[in-house]
Amino acid sequence: MNSSEHPLTCESLLVDASKQIASDTPRLDAELLLCKVTGLTRTGFRAWPEREIPAEQARAFQQLVAERILGKPVAYLLGQQEFWSLPLLVSPSTLIPRPDTECLVETALELELPANARVLDLGTGTGAIALALASEKPQWQIMASDRVAEAVELARRNSDQLGLPIAVVHSHWFDGLPATRFDLLISNPPYIRQDDRHLNEGDVRFEPASALVSGADGLDDIRLLIRQGPDWLTPNGWMLLEHGHDQGAAVRHLFQQAGWRTIQTRQDYGGNDRMTLAQNPRNQ
Image 1 (cartoon, rainbow, N blue to C red):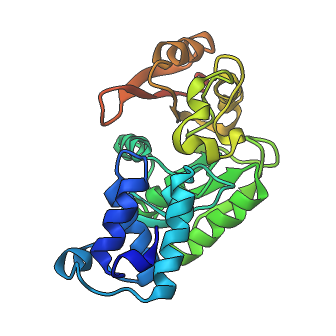
Image 2: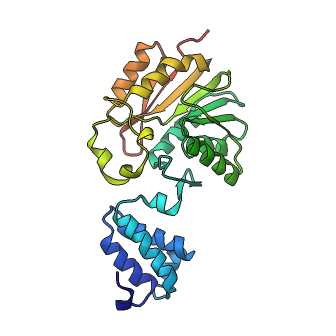
Image 3: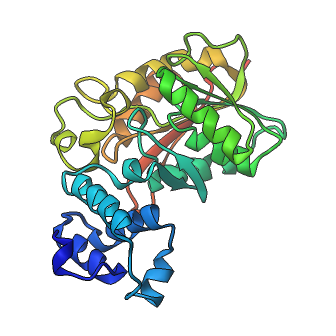
């Protein structure tokens, strides 16, 4: 992009960048990146397309565009991603929160849980699920855990920044947790097969493999959670797990084998199997 050939206006920069970005939403990507460097809004770009952009800001924008052209996710370039209308800090040490995971939050909120329910978000990453629940149920006692120290710190920063108190602990699944029982165990665990071709495509190329991949069939971590979960649940407590669109039957079978009760699979916004929930098999 040669700035000497074009006036440095909002529209000229956005048009030029949109032609180069190979994504499903090139114009949106460009607008979000220009918002970051200028502090302007997308509405402002449309209202004043000929607004001139200082050369220093234009260069910073062009650098971000160059990184986006290479495939780096917009969320990492912005350092932020919205989830459940909450602006969350993100980093390459965590998975980028997806809109479909909001279905997990919706399902959790539909459960009949105690007014002061104890909830554990396993593998919390940015803290997205735990913080979304905290925003809706301030009376719940919510804990979040992650095996990655950087993710633990990021979730704590998001909690502080949003003023949504949750307890965030450094733990690999149930290892290192304080001895207690929860009314809800909720998780978006790794569930991608290690040979899945999608690992080499799109944004996931830049996301941590430890948050994505779980063995030959993608179910290793889900097996562990289903096997160990009853030890951490109240008698009528629930486990709610996100999984791949083609894993619903397999996850139900794992719950059934382990004797769980009230097993249900729910769909995401696209109508795909996306999460399965069940009640503690030990109801005494």
